[in-house]
View (tube, rainbow over the protein chains, first blue to last red):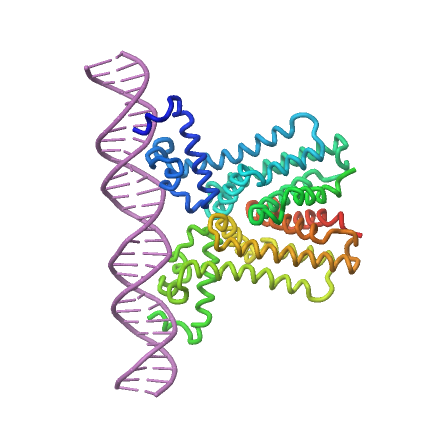
Length: 200
Length: 200
DNA sequence: ATTGCATCATAACAGTTATTATGTATGTAA
DNA sequence: TTACATACATAATAACTGTTATGATGCAAT
C-alpha cells in the first residue's frame, strides 16, 4: 500500500536506506537502543523491510560497520591524490574528526561498535584489522613526507603513525564528549604542537 | 541459608562486592550483557541481593562509574606527592594505561560508559565534568613542571593538558583493541616522542 | 488473464529484561 | 520469649527483544 508512494528502482536503494537508518539510530540512541523496531520506526516502516533485505540483525550491523571503514578509506584516498604537505594532513585530520554532523554520526557509531567489540569475538577482528591498516597507511604516508622533505628525514615513520593514530582517536572521543572544549582552532593547535617536533 | 556461611560485619562490604561484580561483568561481557541476573550470578547469589542494596540498576551503575573516577584521582594523588619530574609522569602514565588486569577492567568499563553516555543525558555530565577536572589537573601539573624547570618555560600548560589527555585516551583504546601492537616499551616511546618538544 | 516474484505488513513466538511483591531465615534488643 | 529489622531467595509481572511464518499488494512476464 505504502509501496505505491515510492518510485520504481527503489529496491536498489532501499537496502542502503536501512543501513543509513540503522547508523542514525546507533549514533543517536546508542547500540543497545538500536532494536529492529526502533530502526524500522526511524525509516518509517515495519520490521518486515529489515527482515526482507537482511537475514540477521547481525548482518545489518556488519554492513554498517563495513561502511564506516570504507568511508575512512574514501576520504583518505582523496588526501593522497597529488602532492600533499603537512598542512594538507592537518586539514584532512580536521575534516575527519567529528566536527560536521556527518562525522559525528560516524564517530559515535564507530565508538559504539568499539566498546561492544570487547566482549564479542567475531566483530573484534574487524577493529584490529582496521587499525592495522590505518597504522600501515600512516606509516607509509610519513615515509613519503620524509622522502619529499616535508618533514624531517630522521623520524621513525611507524612511531609517527602509532602516535598520530592514538592522538586522533583520543581527540575524537574528547570532541564527542565536550565539543565546545575542543573547537576547530583548538584541534589545529593540538595537531600543530604534535607535529612541531618533526618539521624540518 | 547461604547467609550462614558468611561472616558477620559482611553487610558493610556486601555493597562493595556488588559494585565490584558489576564492574567485572561490564569489563568482561560488555555493558549490554551486564543484566541483573548476570551480575548476581557473578557474585554467586540471586538478584535479591542487588535489589536489597540498590534501588535501581541505574543506581548501581552510577556507583561503578563514580568508583572509576575516584580510582583515577587516587592514583594521581600518589604521583603528586613530593617533587616529580617528566620521567615520573611517564611512569605514572604507563601505570594508568590498561596494562595490568586491574587497569584493563577500569578502562573497558569506562569506555563502555563513555559510548553509552552519548544517548542518555544524565550520565553524560559525569563524563564532561570528569574530563574537565582531568584537564585542569594536567594544566596545573605542567605549570608546576615548567616553574621547576623540568620542562621548557615557554609552553602552554592548557594546550599541553589537552594534548596529553587526548593522546592518553587514544592510547588506552588502542591498547585495549590490540595490546600486542602497543606494548609497554612502545607506549614509552610514544610518550617520550610526545614530550620531546617540551624538554628544556 | 494468470502465474510468479518482489516488497512489504502483521502477528505470533519464545526468550530476556528490570522491577516489584512476598516469603523466609538470621541476628539483635527488650 | 517476644519483637523487629537485616539480608537475602523466590516468583510473578509487564515490557521488550530478535526471529519466523503467514498474508497482502503490486508489477512484470508469459
